[in-house]
Length: 90
Image 1 (cartoon, rainbow, N blue to C red):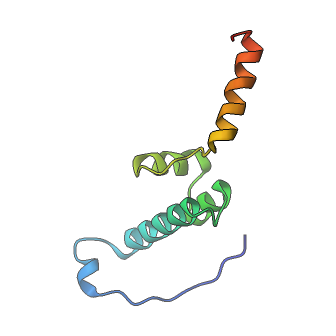
Image 2 (spheres, rainbow, N blue to C red; image 1 turned 120 degrees about the horizontal axis):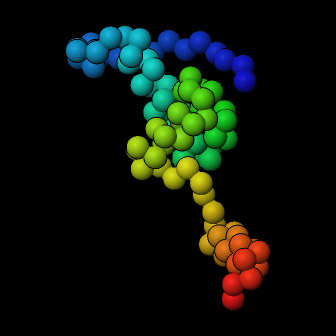
């Protein structure tokens, strides 16, 4: 993924008690999580934007109540039917 450098202005009050680098890391993480939640980025691309590996990013999503695996009702029913077929369950 190619990156672009952006410059943003934030009120100084937001930086009270937090180091700028930490603030930037948090902004990247929350932006990546929101874009993933909106289906604008894949899990891998969102993790890359956040500067995390997939496992770390999935953990962050979970900690913030964002679904990591998303199935439609039809997809979930299909998976359940498939798994029951493998186990011979009716």
